[in-house]
Image 1 (cartoon, rainbow, N blue to C red):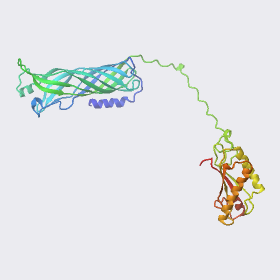
Image 2 (image 1 turned 180 degrees about the horizontal axis):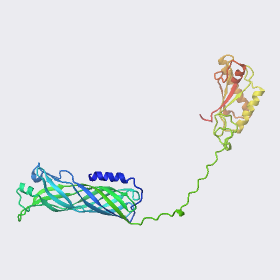
Image 3 (image 1 turned 90 degrees about the vertical axis):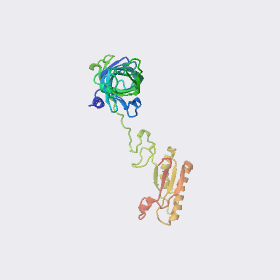
Image 4 (image 1 turned 120 degrees about the vertical axis):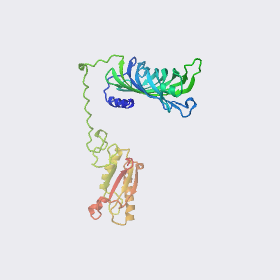
Length: 392
């Protein structure tokens, strides 16, 4: 299994662990494990002026460790160190021609996003110093180029930026697993040094290694002690929540509580306003035949409506007159308008401001009962107070 695949397996398994550790200000985080160093391709082209020759630095795996000091809850300083990485160096058409060891100590500033979580991702940036050592050509390459024994490969030290992204994943209060990915800017000047006295080195060019490193480590947290468990006896159960308040009483079932209902005996099913008063009031009147004159019985019924209008000064609307279908429809329309106006005139005579009401005649167009019977016709001869302040 590659280092990349192993990192994915560890990440998937550890994300389900319980929250039992955290990185806090003043903590030291020590990590140790391994990194795969994966250099970029075609590290040096046009070797020795030959466009067909390309130099490659191969992958390497090595032991690494680092120490992070958390100088704030989210901020830390990390020093990365390693056992020397050993790389094979290949040249097109020649295979492995040399090998070298290198050390990549790196100092980085890190930002930890969730220092008190079980999964603690972070990012970092810093400075890398890479030193190369034990550069050796293989004998077959020296023989192929007819170079004398003792010819050395020299790689200069490198100094450049580095960036990283990683995460610590809690195992328990002190122990955790770490995974990270890093990029290093590593460029080195390469040259061949002959064992001949006073001979000038043969410059190969600048080798651009610029590797990505994939790491997996085990970590340990040094710092503040584990918090003491809260004694069971010291905990108290939360008091039960108070019972919900009783629903307000609504005697007539119109949706308006009794303490806010200005009309407590509204008929069931009536459309009401915010005060619990009917939006439409029907009054069956007993006009004399072919007359718009109110009878004594009509006046008594209207007196009840007038009393309510005086008690509810916010009511505005139209007075709609209706007739049965006896007679000509056009004549009935005019008769209904005169009857509606007679109702308004009577209300005005009894103290209702006429600006609150408007007359409207609908004739025989909206019956509520059959006009085939006297009883039905009597129901159709009616007046409806339809409020305009109620809304839709």
